[in-house]
Length: 417
Image (tube, rainbow, N blue to C red; front, side):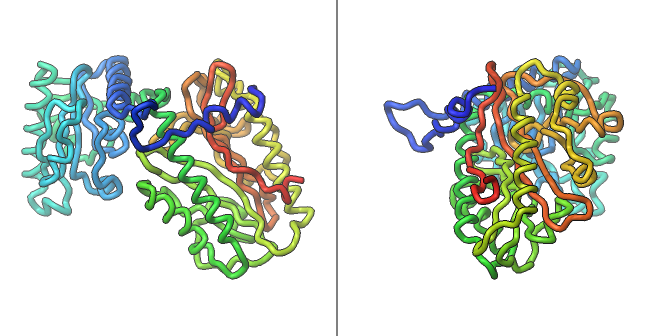
């Protein structure tokens, strides 16, 4: 493990987002091509000829384009074909084709066809067959194969069946794309640090606004406002709760009024500027007053868990070894433990999810922590019969020497000491 002053060195060099002639900047074109190359390598490894992608996260990763991501999570109005070498073909929402003009990862931009019931209605079968015929034509031009093996990520049964009628073999794209996304480039790390900087500004606003009488929803809105005002995009879940709402963890915020003397816990789950995810958790104390001994015990226990598990992070350690060596959760907190010890992070929560030792036989899988991974380490401490709990989480980069913390927001002195 690196000394504390070294673990924050990279994070302290957060990039500026405006051009200056004498400073290096985030090179978005270089980042796009790095990510496409990573996808190519994994598709080759999976012995595929190409991928057909609908997931807006995967489209963004491979092409560097994004448009209406939340809407397209549930209505497929854009998609992309990624060959195993060369540039991609993007099918953009009709009328927005020019938004992808000049993107160097794209060989062509076409108009997407409506293959959702929302747009096609009772003509869905007809539209889907037309869609499949066009996709096969594009695949033939890119790969030279009439009967390709293609990886797909998010696809309804009808388009999948239509492709199979043309003789295509379909496999899952999610595994290859998750493996591609796991090792971050220098530009991706800079984007992530920029996003975390915005997220922590929002956290500071929440800390300043916390007072008796504010509702959970109102307090949570400070993070949203900060994110959007800095070019951020969305927040994946409304994970803020107070007092008796905290334990067990996972409830979304509501109009509960926060009272003096309560703990307030949150998890940012924020897709920030430049599309990178900020997944940091803290627990605050609502003043006036002083924390109780039990509140301090919960907080210090969570901090102890994270400190121990951070000390294990290094390239070469396997997921199983990490799980076996992880901090042993006391029995009183075991049932309400967080679902995983750690998970990957990038454009969103990513592979891997490292299981607790007690869960290993049922859900655990092995692998290796590698240099260039970015991980989030999780802790929730709350007794099964308890009222409150404490949520803490750190976002880190795996380095040759161990790790560097990318999240820098301080802990609560009154709860820690």
